[in-house]
Image 1: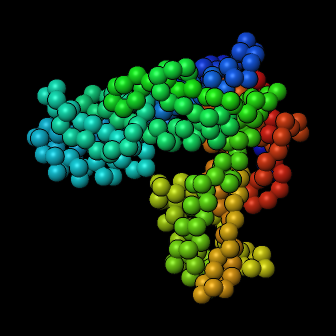
Image 2: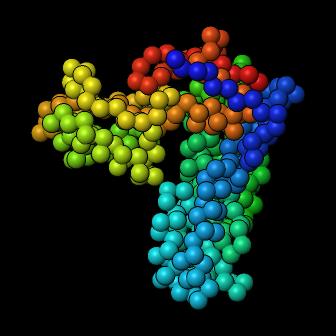
Image 3: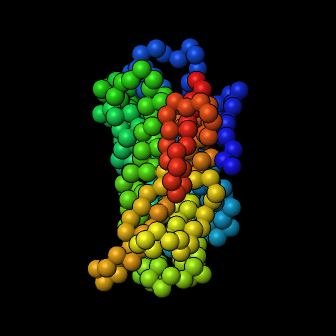
Length: 312
């Protein structure tokens, strides 16, 4: 039986910014601005930043290359460290810029010793804020909340004409879920997996062992960030299902070989705990899943209704 997940915080998680509280601004625009700041703060103090700092600090190969001034060795050492998280990086040596990686216009630079890096680009921030608020997102020097462009320029981020509702927190929670199930990333992951030759072959021959091997391979790819994958025959018979037990937002696509439909893949890029934490970090709300009371409901994996309750 699915157990209700609840995160009750007396204070905000590290790096999640301002907390949604009873004294939060009454107007929808002000509420969304608070949420926007929370999203931006995740790019400065969130889990991706913490993980990136740990990888950079823990690399003896990188430290050695910087110490002896070997740029080629430093670039080689950085390849496994950047993963899909670090979008731009500058390394200083003897007080001067020594090595730069990445060219995208980035936001929220984090300075950690000789390293200055960013885990988000301007384009990614605009897409995310628009997706969860419906607002037109403008990054410039006018109205909005303060931010920093890589490496140190001051800018402001404004959310213009957000999709105001009676409950902005519920709006954001719904939109986050929608992105996890129908967003561009999950659709790209679906296409990639459904067209992978080794995965397609495992589905075609109905081999659960071969299928599991291919699914585990996908789990190891940080660019996919997929948490569960299920494959069935065209009639719905199960071939294999690998991943976490408590997962939501399933997305499906037909698997084809030589133009013929040979099966169906259903996957998720988000588990229950991840969704709960994400909504909390962005809105400050306490989230409960699987309770009798519901503000709205979402889809569990691979099917079925899952109630969502928000306490704020």
